Length: 370
Image (cartoon, rainbow, N blue to C red; front, side, top):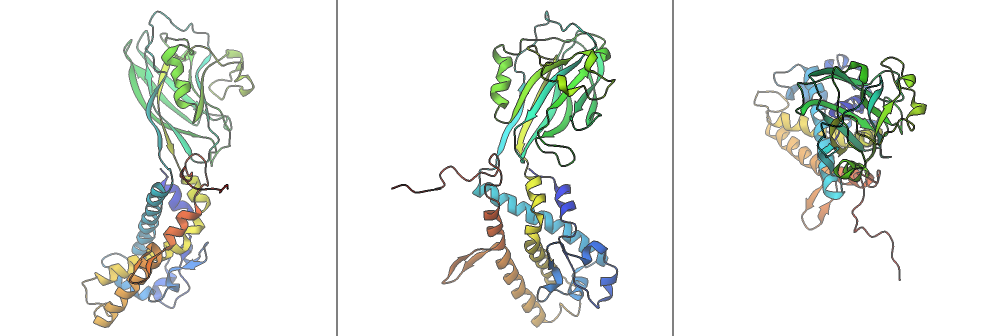
């Protein structure tokens, strides 16, 4: 998985347009007049602002150019990721795992003491693992409505919060969709996240189990490859309103009892950061993908435009389209065989950047012994 919005932000000015006498150049957004990668779309043979103007059809020039940059950037990244999944062992790691996996004994209630109670989550050291807290399951002695908080120790206030409700002793689920990761672009690295509630917000009581008992402890067996997980109960003296508890007490606050609620996790390989950190490597490929789109749109333009009506121009466009597609995606050449494209070489460059999610196949030969 990856964030399309993060990719588009990183790729905003990855390719642009060289200065042109065409009147449409002056009106282009400033970010399209520069190129962080050094590649310009109209540097390619046959690609001019005049051609782009003819291919735009019913759209304005600027709206068309920006839409092509957005769609072709996302299309190219998706094709790259699809090839990665075939060449490397990228995969979904865990899906909808419920933790802890044990029913509550309604005779074992948590005695409230004005604490902050919940679970500590420490993601594995990886740039690519994303832990998504999908839902919370709540069971209470009475009807409840209180706030659940998610704290990142690099931030003083909660990075997420939501109202959780239940009507009584039957388990009810609330959707959260909260992400935690080892290395956050807007936070720090190596954090232990806290997800929990303040006991003073409860009207009734919740239930507990021994964390080490049977199926409850299976939570550690399931998640230990991707995250550390443990219940905690911060004493009132370590709290400051509804802000982050004093993290120097996190270890002494760990509990051998569960926290009164259960969670559902998805753990996935999120390669957003890897893609964003290396986005300029895609410059030439995105340049060609955009050029291919312009040529294809020009060839399919049914209007009588001066650059598209002559058979000679159409034949030239078709040949350029074939050449650029071959250069980008590779293909077979008669009597020669398969010629690698830019996208093939990009896939090789990305191998083994992350041991958890972008790992070479296990049968790869690394050395030879005689």
